[in-house]
Length: 329
Image (cartoon, rainbow, N blue to C red; front, side, top):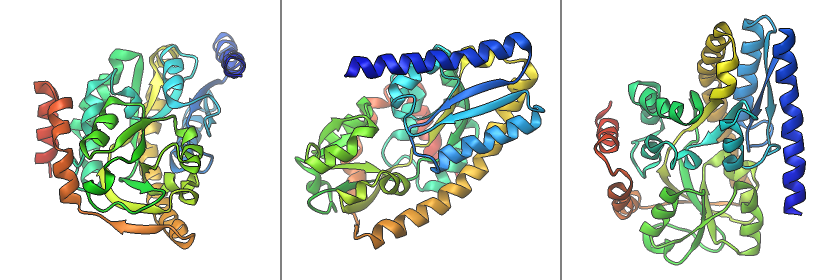
């Protein structure tokens, strides 16, 4: 079955490459394919659609964006590989799958490195964010902009989490990232890397005891149905990134490259407006559905997770990024 699904996806991706070739040959509309694992209506999906409308308008219809949401093109790790080779043109991804390729992306994911979401936005909108996004260029990507991923917190099936001691022995789903495995180990949990699309069934069947994510993801995935204890640890505020395939980007005429870059930046305020509204709506919805919202001892979690810094901010450059983030207003 796995081979059949892979073959079908390869056929789909191969067929999607044809419009680019035809469009370039006839100087007609170029359509860029954009991947996202989140469902239709999710703020990142809607932000890329918004960007697509700007691109089409500003290019006079010469450039369009087609959004494939809901993991239609695969999970993030596999779509990233397709993006590197130009089969997928645009991709909204979490930083986790990029950590091994672009070490700079580790820093925003370090626990409690940002004071709050406003601090995260200021940092990522400035010189530090530009420096981190530039690291993607060395690995077949063009970083276009950052989208919010909110404040990530723990949610569990059987009991509330309030201190690091409550985490001991719990099997917690994490992204497929060495950093996230280390963060869970630091609080005594058993990290269980799983693709995003497998988390609901893993929670439902007890393969994992909990997971961690933001309010909109907890809501949109319906994880609140099978893990009703949401503990507001806010241990990470790492943003997400919209990247273009360098191969696809380099084939665009310069004026269309500039239009795409600017439209991506102009989509960020719209994304944040949608994000803030969805966060409030999701929290209200899952609370009304019976989820138990718990406060935690954040200082205790920060102390427990502190050793992760020495493991992942290994060189002078990464340590410097950490210091600059902490010192920034």
